[in-house]
Each structure stands twice: as structure tokens, then as C-alpha cells.
Image (cartoon, rainbow, N blue to C red; front, top):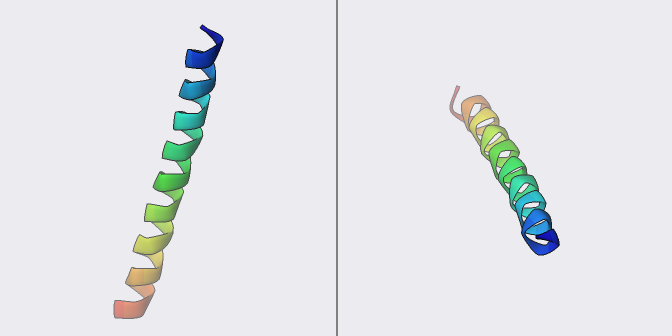
Length: 34
């Protein structure tokens, strides 16, 4: 149970990082092509 809990926290933080990186890429792309 503890292992699953740690895995879910790690995956949620990883997904949050992926989402923030995608937002940053979209913002920089918008500035580059504008």
C-alpha cells in the first residue's frame, strides 16, 4: 500500500512537470512565431 502511494505521488509530480513544460513550450513557441 505504501509503495502504491509513493508511486502515485511520483507519477502525479511527473505529470505536473510534463504539463508545466508543455505550457512553457507553447508560450515560447508563441513568442518565437508571433
